[in-house]
Length: 436
Ligand code: XLS
Ligand code: NI
Ligand code: NI
Image (cartoon, rainbow, N blue to C red; front, side, top):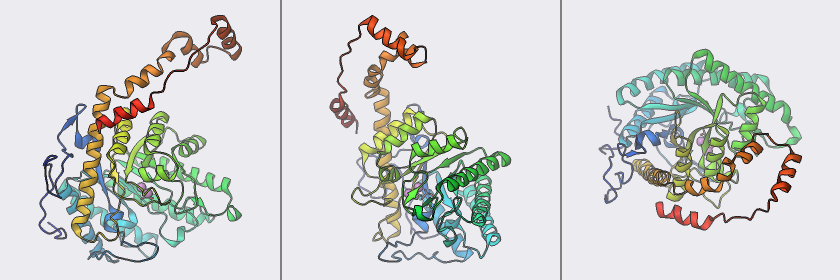
């Protein structure tokens, strides 16, 4: 049954690039085949619960701008919110959604009440998923909003808060498992510190390492088949976040013996905050074998915080999906829009238009990426550039077959005097621009 929130808007469909409708897809054509696979199955879009249905439109200088009938603390409002959310998923034709526990259930007085509230909503979600055919990309626990977490969750100096957070994650993993979620995400919102004057870094890292091991052990205990994903972010809310970027997360996983168990959920805006490009983070995660999923959004390039805007830059999307496809595409992961409206965008259909534009932008990027891959537009040059390493002696050098002094002898014997070769950056940039 429709919630009525979006009026009588019909399901949004692909109309092609010539369409003049604000509520139609010009590029996102779910059934179009790219590289032998449907576009919908490549992109695996998800709508996030928090920005769309929970965030009130506040900024540091002003409070709520959105007036939504479901804002409040009752279970009835939580269910109304779910009705609207599932309406939006189906109107957009987005197959997946994502949520934190605190997004979907009223806040209880204690752990027990939180758990009861979550279980009631999970049952409600299960019915809605059955009715609408929508699926859960990932679930997660909000371990950063409540004041108990102000000094961290897993990395809190107080072991009781560690325990409360661990118990909460257990309930959220149970919820995700019950709803057949395809991943479980941990973004360490307050796993970091403000000042070293009051912080014991080594102790906090060991706590975080143990916490993550507990999560992995529990995943196997309950037979959860999805991936466990860490979402890196360099700062905000804490000044120094432990999961700074993909490279930091990899080092952390290695140290705590989890590199084969945990992968990463890479967010566009977080990559920029870390001083990287999105494609750098994606390519590195592929190279390290820990790529999992994407939180898609964009940051304002002038401000130094996480503005979580909807993506609208096609060349950036093309490079992002190029790296996703090069790594073999998503398996359990997908494209979750971790993005929110600007606080002046008050109308219900602003929510729809934001996603329509973002999905089209991603679809254009994907189409360009698939074509570049098919044509070998970039890879032909890169392959050729590294082709010397396929030669016998070069291989031996890489595999440890030569010592340093043997290499020196070899250089002398062969009288090696190599000439540098052009990296052709401008040519490759021009090629990329021909595809977008
Ligand atoms: C915040 C994060 C958050 C995670 C889920 O910056 O992006 O929204 O995706 O906890
Ligand atoms: Ni995110
Ligand atoms: Ni974010």
